[in-house]
Image (tube, rainbow over all chains, first blue to last red; front, side):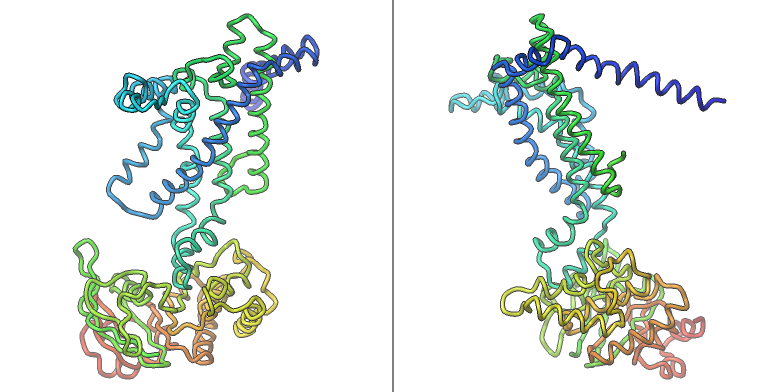
Length: 267
Length: 240
């Protein structure tokens, strides 16, 4: 009795809130034909924005992997003062609104902030450029890898590592041959989530980017700019690129959840 | 190899886990550390393996001080209670692990490693299971692979931490004999940690009864049964 109603509601809600809007982006973007879409996407400013977004994601990715692995390892394997605090601190970026995060960075690393003003005499500027965008993207994405890797690492336990130690393995061999193979897919999954977030981040980046056309505009910022310029075709065309990048990460996630169901990736 | 444990002490968070433990393990013998949980037997085994450091006292292997030698340099084979097999490696790769990671001149060639793995698979009577993964094995088979992996490095001492506790009674009984036979065949000095006295008496040449961080008595079954050194030993042996 209740089942069809519940299922119907769920389907209706997904249709209204998720499927229709995404479909609308594509229909609107291609409304004037593929050639108009292609022209809009290859606008120099839009191309620059795509390039900057991908560049940012590529810089953030390795930092996230290394930081996430180190933090997860430390929390899972060592008992040290402040361990619980570290767990909470790593979650902060999830709790704080991205725009607030952006403002925090501006306050500290901006020209009038303690760090920013100290660096200014040396000609080093951290905000309103690629550095600023990368920094806030790191802030927003740093919990993902830790959150995926930590549970797997905790379950994997120490016994395998201790066994490897008694068999004569050094720290690096233990990590490479014993620990890493157990967490590889959780790591990849966390990295994909982080990358998806880095590509789509708007709020925090908008505060620190400085919005210099063709230079510090990431793809989400560029879409908003085009839309505010009444260039709807350009905005929707650029939006399709962002949506496709997001869909790509979705497909990767699904693939991992099918091939490696134990990683915590849910289909 | 003989092992001399000389007045070892260890405290965890202010609580004494081992107080002045001294014990001689003779060359080639099978010695069991028997005691209730919390008696310090596992801590003592971890100390011998080098996985924990003592607060005081010495460990001498054939007269050489190894107290502060890193675990990896001791070349002691250890079988864990959970077996701790590498789950992403095949049985053959698990057994070969200790040989594969050796450095410099000691490291056997690929062909030598393969020969050694085959020998060990024959020894544990599982030659056809080389390509299986740990999850595809029964508990008893996993335990034998863990034994083979520990023996692959030609250990100077074999350490067994409750190796039968995860098995059902029937498998347990049949494996006791096979562990004993393996130890004899290889001729390695072995230490077994257990809380089960029938297991200790069946496998070991001598049994050290531990209680509250102390060794109460060391002896053969007859010695412990006929001349218990303390009330604890009398009651513990009688209760089992």
